[in-house]
Image 1 (cartoon, rainbow, N blue to C red):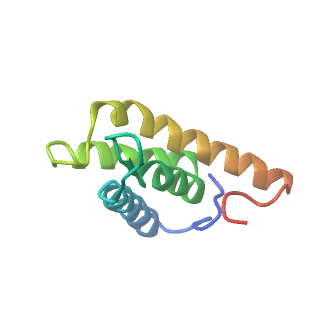
Image 2 (image 1 turned 180 degrees about the vertical axis):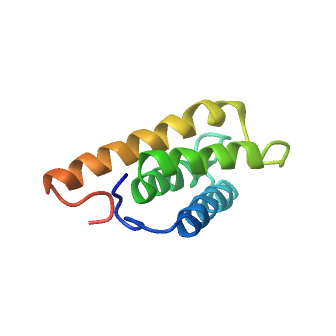
Length: 113
């Protein structure tokens, strides 16, 4: 069973709730746009939220949360883009995988140390 920073060994309901909260967090972070000087394209907080969810939930639950985010946000204006569908799932999985390996080695303890 996957050991993570926040959830650890817990019930299925808590894990499911964490996956849903992770997807909602990424959807809300995608709505926050920070204008950048010199470019018409604003920066959103979505990439930071994806890495936060991946680091907190671990590889499998983080990727599952991003699958829920991708499938739940189809057709919602301003949230979902084609490029995000390709990147958020592997990004959350990779961040969760690295966080688990770092905490297993005792080097810093993961994403939120």
